[in-house]
Length: 215
Image 1 (cartoon, rainbow, N blue to C red):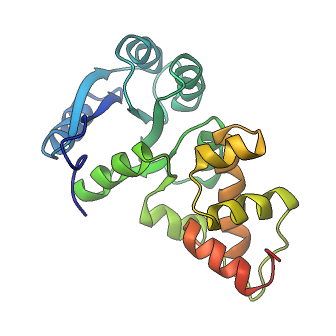
Image 2 (tube, one colour):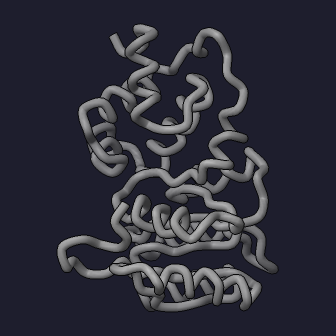
């Protein structure tokens, strides 16, 4: 996959927030090595991340989930209220499923492990910048590891969201179509993934169609 933004487009502007300086520096070095991505600021706490985001208005904010004081989930909500166009990706060592859903329900574009490779990190930034949900492969395997012979019934709204995904709409476009927030769309998608035993939107649509759930 090509790194950064193609065709001379403006670089993706990233804010990093983690209470460990060495982690911030490591993430910064990996991202700055990619064409089309620039780190515009660093924050050592959730409170500082909120202030920096309001001042710098980044395209993407990478947030540690658990920092002293304001955690990443709380900071996510505040950043998105102040900078609606910003996409927040939680970056952490924790793999607890409830934390993934808490972050996404707060509006995060997804969830990435600190142990992810350089390319996974770059891909996550690019994916979030496109308005898509980010879920690192190891977390996808954990979150969706329980597969059932027949998919659980999808709710009416989950089917609506998957139909629109099948039409090629982004999360933002689906939200506008259904008069709901982008965070709500992401929550419906993640719940659909778990019910269907899949880990991405394309496979979710295909499996739902195969099982006659989108008729």
